[in-house]
Image (cartoon, helix red, strand yellow):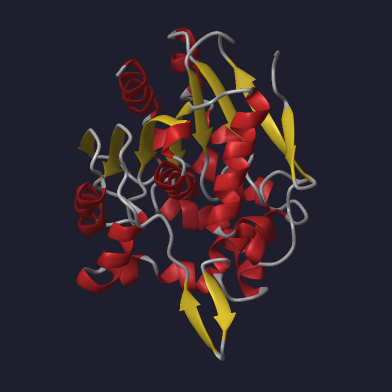
Length: 280
């Protein structure tokens, strides 16, 4: 059907990079905060050279023409539906799905709610949502996740991050060129608010109180690889190791001496891991 450069869902238009042999195994790569589809640019060449077709969308809130207002449009079911709509636009029944950071959270939920669309699952950094929820009461994960609560405050995070995003990213292990690039992109009108909407959707008002939203608690049955960096400042060991409790299909947990930013700082490792998953 040719190359896909964009697709639509519910009036939103998503930008897409579609590279590699059109008849190769299909891999969909989902980025995290505060990146976009360019986060995978060091990973793509190795996948393409191995004959893989790589489809990489800018997700909701990151694609300039896909930034709906409010919290509800950024709940997990909407993010997952964006990915299934991408597969439909490609005419693909299923794909090998790779996700990092928030993209990993979407990948986990896709694999639990629509396993028939997932040939294999490769998640970088982000533990299974249920493992992360358990870690909030059984480890020091709440300290690591304090920033997530701060990001849910209206307006203030935008004001602070416009000035401090690059140094904040550098402090977590992201190399300076990447940190500057991401900060510059987030300076565009509406970009930070769209990206932060993912965090704000975690909390919804209801009956006079706030409650966290959880999703993707069912076990994963598809072949899964989870790659976690032991120097990750945001996502700790307890949740990483507990992820195994939530996967009943073939599963491999790979711990590496890396930071949170695996696509940017360990692209060869990521490429090799994805190719192993694709080849089964």
